[in-house]
Amino acid sequence: MNKNALNTYTEELNKQLWVPNDPVRKVNHRGSPRVTGCHPSLKMRRNIAWESLLERDFVFLAEFDRTVAVYYAQPLVIRYMMDGKLHAYYPDFKIVRTSGTVEIAEVKTDEDAESDENDKRFKIIEKILNGHGADFHVYKESEIRAGVRPANIEDLFRYLNDRVSIKNALAIRNQFCGRKEISLGEIEKCLQWTESPIPTIYALIAQGALDLDIFSKIDVNSPIWINENCQSIACRGGILSWQ
Image 1: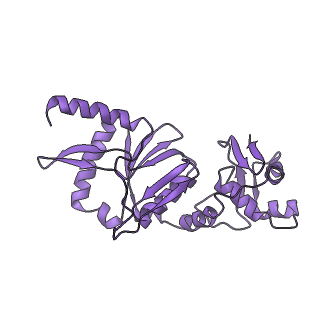
Image 2: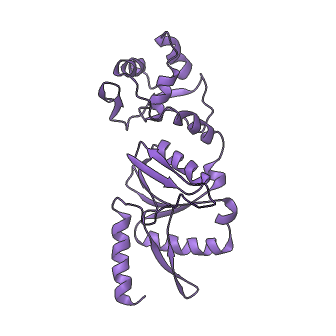
Image 3: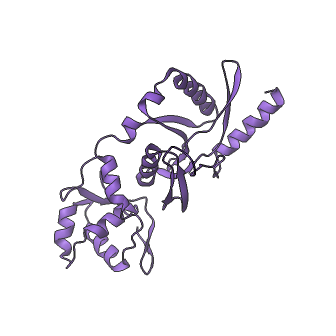
């Protein structure tokens, strides 16, 4: 790559890091020996493609991670030199945090992440990205699937697209008047609905209106609190201002 081409590429990479991205490489869902699919993202209002079950689990994490503002799959291409040869690297995801930080994310099994070749490659990639003001993180399987978080997210995921009524959403929010947090069981006891409010509460958690400790097992003793970053939620009957 000559100097002019390098300068042009550097400018293009810098642009792609800081703007919304369409996939630069399409995921092939046909004829592939790998398990692939798409997630209908509530956060992104589009389908997010994944190329392995591990990537799917990462997408679920991004959906429920309150520090993730937006994220993109197959967002850009990074060209780099290694062993005297020019290579092209297609990262799995780009994450923009609520803090404004841009992070390029690679999803790998522990074995792949720790291989000598990838370790060498990722150090080069990290240096390039840091030079553009972006972070680089390799998410290992042991990190993505750690503890009870995956099981909690799988349980909540079933309620991600459920629309609660404005009346029920307000009834639950009113339980927090003058209180920072309430246990799941206490909300259920105070509401005294004919039917259990747990599915409605789970839907509000899944959609970001309420929050809890996703790293701890969810049960009746789990503390619940209002997500202060949620401004509004889509309910049956219209949009409800949440703050």
